[in-house]
Image 1 (spheres, rainbow, N blue to C red):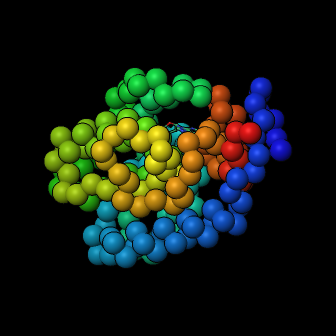
Image 2: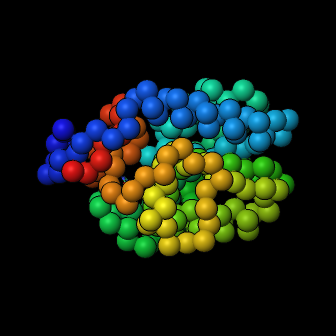
Length: 175
Ligand code: IMP
């Protein structure tokens, strides 16, 4: 068990389990995008570790870029979603794959998909390391999912609790 600020967390997904699944996802993504040179759009901050591990096992040519969007405060979704920040690439007529750390309510995802569709993308798909199906309020479902997890707060492997815990190699669940 570990303590972050005022909360206790227990081990949930091991370093090995994450590594194996990320490798499998990379294989699925490589097969789906063979010969297409997609633009992978990683959503900061939470996705940075997942992105780094994933792209190093993808074996078809890709481009990677990073954007920012926030809809979350501490343990609760606020429902407020900000604009996409930092997208410099021209995405018109391109195959886009959004990389998310976690899809919870799906608010962020819905917003992103709408914004990208408006930019005239050729195709748009979503890969997320974690998916909380019980919490999903929106219709959009991710195309590539690492782990379906229960509706409990998790931390580690890029995901934070109040800015802390991103550096953990494993994923921990709120006790
Ligand atoms: P959504 O818009 O409700 O799907 O929330 C998506 C964002 O909320 C994610 O990209 C995370 O940054 C954050 N988030 C959702 N659930 C968790 C969690 O269990 N731990 C840490 N961050 C989370």
